[in-house]
Length: 254
Image (cartoon, rainbow, N blue to C red; front, side, top):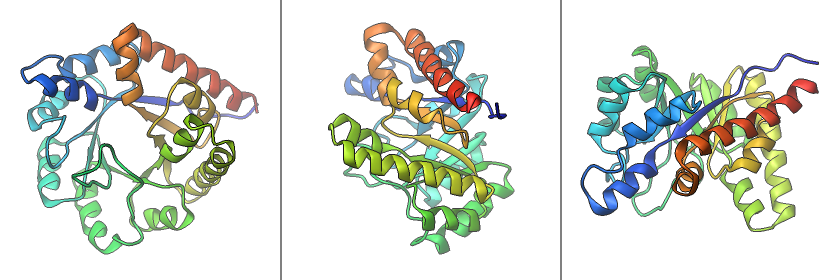
């Protein structure tokens, strides 16, 4: 039996704010739901402050930083505006993601190969401020290699392609995407990177990916918010934690 690091669960509260913003006002409050998620077993909270503020707002980020008892992971695009907000907010971590105004959700990973010249000083400034930087990228060898060169200590593997293929019943594509994730996680770990994963995960896929010992954190949001409408956020987070623990036990036994 090999030693495998604990697997953390980060809960993304973006879509609590989406529901709030559909009608305006203050309910439901993403900060309140973040606190409930932590009480149910979340190890951290993720929130994406988008350029158009379609869900999370500036005041949400400030309140999350001040009111939650676990680390805050600030998802954002690599723009001057977001850099200033992050440096002011001082979250535990920043996850740099690609962002297009017309997309419904983050589509694909950040192209660190094509944008390394712009990203290098951006990452360095956050590193110097003591903010841990994560890059949300595809499980592609070149992207992973450049992430390491850019001195970002963490990558988050975009699992959307794999999850979508499973949901579509495309077994061949799902297997191809899964093998990419396996190889990417191994390469990133060997390059000295901390490896996270997220996007599109549900109970079943979280249990599966939890068996990869290189991955130490999963960030999950939309699925949990959807489940919370049916069963409550506490039970949904606890079931997710149980699924991850089952998967991790397989890695421990390997």
